[in-house]
Amino acid sequence: MSAEFTSAVVSYTGKTRFRAALERARDGGAPCVGQWMEFPGYTLARTVAGLGSDWVLVDCEHGNIADNEMYLAVGAIAAAGASPIVRIPAGEAWMMKRALDAGAHGIMIPMCETKEQAEAIVNGMKYPSKEWPNGIRGAGAMFAPAYFQQNGQDYLRHANENIAVIVQIESRRAVENCEEIAKTSGIDALFIGPNDLAASMGYFAFDHQKIEEVQQATVRVLKAAKDAGKFAGHFALSADIGKLVITDILSFYTEEHETAAQKSKQGFHFMNCGADISAITVWMSNEMARMKTLMDK
Image (cartoon, rainbow, N blue to C red):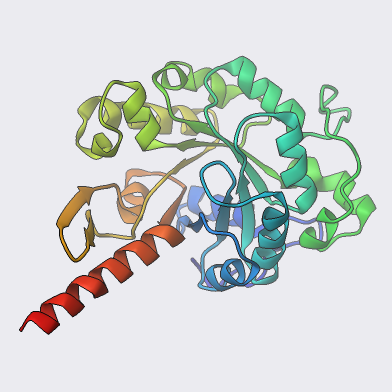
């Protein structure tokens, strides 16, 4: 988002661009802006990461990205100067370990609903130490140090402080417990998944922007994160267009959605402003529709 960061790592201790950009946003500067990857591919990852975002998320929950492809994407993103963030399929320690050992600068864990779950996530993310005696991460990260511009010893010393622990708040139960989750030591950020949050409240997932109850829940989570001194994030599909326009040769429809600019102005510290599959779907569908219109004239 800002020319002030040109590398994925901004200090000799391995401080990441993602964390530095979060702090910039917290201190009143530009938001920490990222992109979302659903497709596999080293070249795609490097291309997306070179477009100026602070971070790129590799989606191993809903995306078509397997373990080896995740490893390749993490390296490509870091090489292009952005922070690689990996969303794992579930809050399982072995899944965290794979993404951590690949060199991820942050891990996003879906469906965190209680303080106890948050504590278990933190334990899975941390090497055991005096500060984190309950940490269970194994000390075998052979590939990760390179993506923090460190040797193995320095990585081991600083990983607990450098790697961001991001939990998703995306259910009614999670909102009810969001204050306790935010206060959990070791949790760095809360990230709202609006589609699942709306669905858990009994609404159609894609209507979340229009549902007052969902929007009130969003405000509550934002406040909980800030009150606990944590970072708050939100999913978005574009910078400033309130309708995602998708057309094909037979139909035309619009879908209301939150935008990155809206979330930044609301007070969120970080958000994505697009996704690879959305960019391809929207652009190609619109071009097909335009082609049909031109040929019908």
